[in-house]
Picture 1 (cartoon, rainbow, N blue to C red):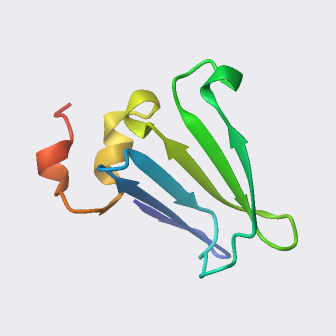
Picture 2: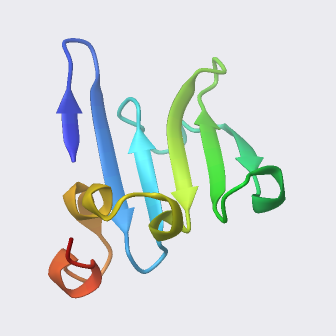
Amino acid sequence: MTLYSKETQLRITYDHIADAVMIYLVPIGPGEAVGADFCFPEQMKRKSNLNLDFNADDQLIGIEILYASRVLPPQVLREAEQIGNRSRQETLPEE
């Protein structure tokens, strides 16, 4: 799933094997995410982990959702850019 605006490109990827969604708020190159904050299930009402990635200027540049299939609508997972070894037809439930 790719959304565009005049100033930024939002990119959403889904890795079925890791059950992880990554939301790129800006393009992220190697080494650009230099810090992260982690939210664990005991801190959240849902059974998921949330990682927030920051750049050297402490700006939020990415959001990672682990155990994504537990907390995201199937449509989001289907429409996300698929990464990993399986095709979306093999891995995602029908609506």
